Length: 491
Ligand SMILES: Cc1cc2nc3c(=O)[nH]c(=O)nc-3n(C[C@H](O)[C@H](O)[C@H](O)COP(=O)(O)OP(=O)(O)OC[C@H]3O[C@@H](n4cnc5c(N)ncnc54)[C@H](O)[C@@H]3O)c2cc1C
Image (tube, rainbow, N blue to C red):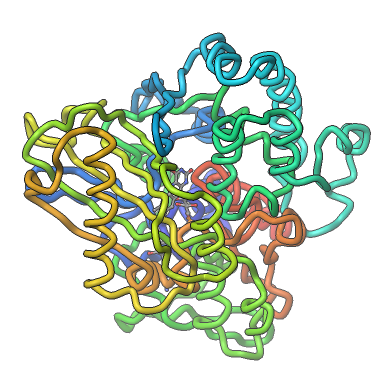
């Protein structure tokens, strides 16, 4: 009989770890507090509308292909991918820009906004491709346990081209002067949870992912990824125990001896890997003596934002909308400061709207639209009240109505909000973060919270708060890296 493992949490990272370990011959039991898998990427249906609860941008299709290939499967065995064109729309104060899928059209768009910017984009993307390829091949699939992991002749030779020590804002401003081009090129790093000026320019690899890799829609939504990973996990022999909320890890002789669930059941295994939020595992499931990090450490971490979300069903089809649109129609810097510096509720927030029924007729009743709205807010923000949520809703919907030239408020037949307190209650999320830790230089690679516990020999961590970072593709990678690391240690 192979070695046994318990994985906590069925988010992308937990499922990836469990499936990789099972493939390597381990007997794996996954304990999940919710009744359905997927964590932050769960889905719900109400009144004929289907909503992906969290991620909505399918980027880096190569990472998903690579994931399934390791289990002799292809993405197309589970869902089809449609490239969105335009990829998305950005609303400015007085105009909007559609981002074309075609690279040639993108060069033309840049050139139309700033003389010479088309050619600049070519150079920018060549550099970004180098970073993407090097990152994927040499940097992200590393457990972050030793500095020597990063010693690679190609990485050393290319260290200046990787731009680790410059920041994204400087990098973008070096290439482009038009403010719309600057915001457009800085927007992808917002996914990484920090301001462009605090994000290493290495992450212009995200522009490559955006502009060259493209924005895709998986048939039936982002939840198709969860369903596909769940199927593969079961095929590999993972046992899923849903509604198993882990409340305590008991340590005996530097080993987790027992995993206690709130329903009274107890489990044990050779190795425990937690894909639940790192801070929750470290500070709530373990006794203080066994924590990896102090309260002061956690307090000093730069968190990616939380989000205020709305899931809205409309009894009509909206005019003048795309699948994805960003509302950068108010002052970018003010809202960014409210998220990252003053950490206060924004006066006039930027927001994002996704309407997946534009692409997929199965996610809303006929003649209807499903609307997902996201306002980024500071992690840890207090007073997430119903009244505040309603005020923001009215504020952004009014702006959206003006921008698209159509009414929304008079057509709402379903509405639900989800905010910081829900992130805490539903996912045990530290400070209600939506996307984990910000990818600033001091929290990159080996400087992230470690995948190993320094006091306990058989406890490991995976997920968006450890390597390589936030996002769906990185969470898949996190699970793979941790599973392979554990297998090597215990084989
Ligand atoms: C609103 C939003 C939008 C996003 N948009 C995008 C996007 O467009 N593209 C993209 O790539 N990424 C996006 N992300 C980020 C991406 O969704 C996450 O990085 C990723 O889903 C994190 O996966 P994870 O496995 O680390 O964590 P989670 O999904 O949080 O999984 C952790 C799991 O552990 C479970 N758990 C917690 N505590 C316990 C316990 N005590 N016992 C048992 N189980 C427990 C939870 O229920 C959960 O299922 C978005 C995230 C959010 C929230």
